[in-house]
Image (cartoon, rainbow, N blue to C red; front, top):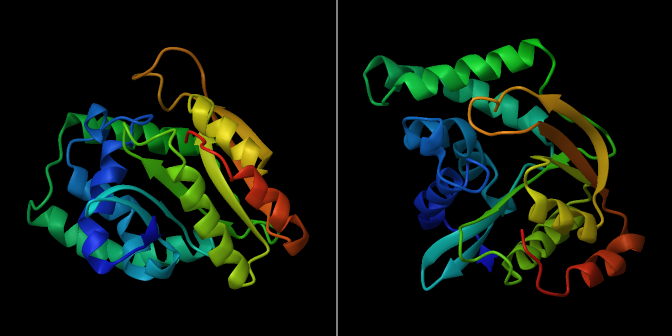
Length: 228
């Protein structure tokens, strides 16, 4: 585990796409992983590189944790600024747009209109985080090391709390977050994934207060080998 370097950009994007469908590759519901990464992870590598840590196996990025100290507020602002570049690439056919992408975008928009999406904007939990490990590297303590490094970075910056959003289908990750000390803030059932999975999907938002008094207990919870 180490801090992010500029040469890790492609590796972070690859892991992001390889784990996007409930831990499996994004191609299950999206046609072009470059567009997917540009929309979802480029804002962090471009604007918050100091808040990225990677798991490295012989020079190969196999996992990461990243986020923004200001959460979705800062992320959305930077994303809006990047839209002209992305739209320019769309106009010049730099991305591959197929039925999978169109269906996913439509379902995402419809879920948003029905109020099924979760976005946490809280003074108590301003920062956000995303953590992913490729298959084969989960359950060996890498997630714990990444989480510890990121939380320490937020504390050193004086950030009072952090949040994340996951689903009820990430069972190992849910156990991990609760062991770290994250508390459930909000959850919503969504029909966004009904085309791809059987059973209900609930979006779940968790928060963790980064008080100095809680540092020892959180570090202690992260001391063993935990799956993410």
